[in-house]
Length: 500
Image (cartoon, rainbow, N blue to C red; front, side, top):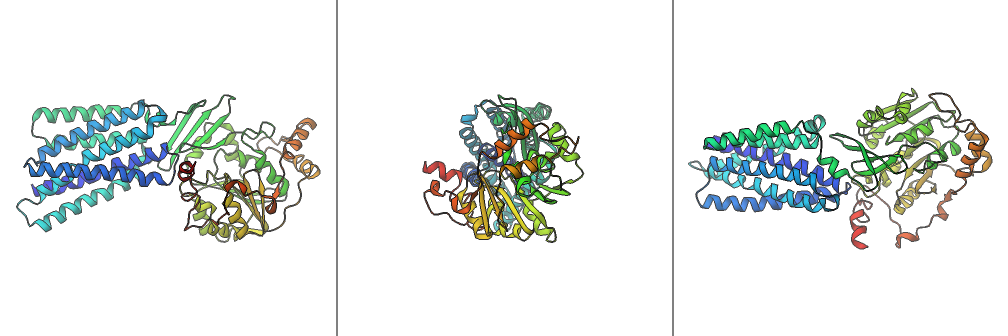
């Protein structure tokens, strides 16, 4: 009995943490990757485990604790897991967070029942302290192994839905070994086989969570790094979302400008002689494609954390053109880590069209420490050009590090030198030389296109730091640091919603 208890303790811990990894993934996806998502999911899960453990204690006090009882609990847990999966797939998106909370709590509660029972069985006829220690050790070992196996391996070869079903199948199989009754064993095996068959079903869970008003979902790519979704809007433009948050639009047409691509066209104008460029984050590739038309360009290094963007380019010629350009080098890595590992690399400018400042880990790209790192990787008179996504603290932080800071729409341009004035003459001289690399045709091949492009670029001025309006935040701006993480927490999305 003691050995069974230790083994079941390991398996119980493994299955609980495995299902928790999936819940965290689904809740984070549904809550737009706010940094509080992990803590909230963990809290709900632990409350469920605690109440489940209380129920398990009552079962032990009533002398019902047995391996057979654990098997029945596993069958009920796995059945509820299936109900939860179906519920998520069926509920409308505006109700989904509430549904997820209920499902996380119930799943954790059912699995929490097992924990005190295995301890009770493990302590029978043994020295209590040593027995509980071993059972507890096995449980912790299972809990440790689960996120490593699920998070680092299984989610890279299976979808979240398939991984979830694998956990359900394992639960049914363990239950079949635990229960005494022949009918229960057959039922568990039958349910495991049916669940195995369901793995081949089309992905439904993430599709359901991805539905958005006025957008048609075209494609989802999933791996252990997250999700890439592609939608079509009413104008037939393709929009790319990263883990359920808008990432960019596939467009390089300055006249259309549906994605404010004029922000990218500003770079060839103010840095027409740039040869070596670093881009952190590929997204749709539209910005990189615009930069690739610069006549003096020799190399663009693109650091992208998620390798699935390469797979995305297989389906969209706009992105494929970018990756076929031999001057463009795509590197799969974290931008900050890559900069730290390559101290000798220097660039004429660094571009980061980063995602929303309130998402998890964005401090890593907006903090004073990171901007100091980028400053050390610039050539003389270089600059960094990054998307603040409306964070005025990002402009203020940039001015602490760089001598010259400018605003163009929601972009911050932090420079080691003053930027030359952008006027009709230098816009025209730049645009007349820009060519697409894949066919060597001019971007602005008619006087009409050239004039429209010039007028587009003159619509918005580049503001000097003194001209930037901080009044909208109704407080003094603050410096973003690695330690205070104010864009994610103090002034993050959750706090701004609660203060409205």
